[in-house]
Amino acid sequence: MVQVSIVIPMKNEGQNIGTLITDILSVCAGDEVEVIAVDDASTDDSAQVVRDLMTRHSNVRLVQHDRSGGQSAAIHSGVRAATGAIIATLDGDGQNPPAELPRLYAPLTDPNARADLGLVAGQRVKRQDSWSKRYASKFANALRGWALADGTRDTGCGLKAFRREAFLALPFFNHMHRYLPALFRRDGWQVALVDVSHRPRIAGQSNYSNWQRGLVGAVDLIGVMWLLRRRKSAVATEAQHRTGPNR
Image 1 (tube, rainbow, N blue to C red):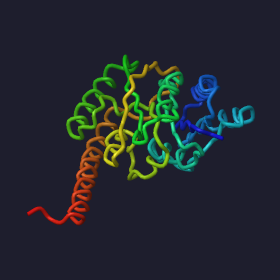
Image 2: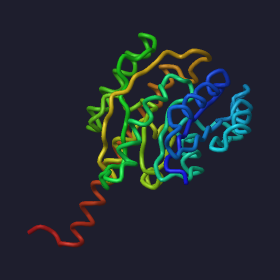
Image 3: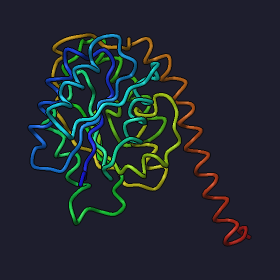
Image 4: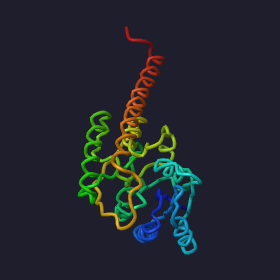
């Protein structure tokens, strides 16, 4: 029986995905896991690399998009296809070390796990990215933290673990993966933060530029602020209906 489903969103990561999945299987060999690689309409051999691994590993699966939907859509597809009650995610570029995965899902799979713990989110230390990418991320995280008060300094880290049903209950929108701490807290879940390591990209190139991230991030931030306020208003209204207006 699968306990943890490890979801990997990927697009044109044919040079990285094979080694990444092999490393995951090695690190998680003692646990009941499945690995789901979600191909977001790659134009390289990413899907074929995964198919080759599937012939040797029964717990490796492939989900494919016929058109590119972005990272959040890929994660959502993988979670929907998963059979484990706990989901762990990491990026398909290989920059998130697979050795960090057990530290993320262990607090959720422990028999004595807190029932209200919904998300364990990684926070990268000593990021192995370009100066411009680190600076843009630092600015975006500071702005997001100020606006949402989500308590994390690095919500863009791909290393996360969470309860499958709790994730599927969240409002889905493009780029939602960058706001999971705020969204989980919005629904009443506790969030744990874990410092994780980071490594440089070995092959291929990022599918997003700093400008693209910044442009969509500004719009997304406003939308998430609205979602948080909407939730608070709904809760307040529900409580008022139960107890009557204050006098």
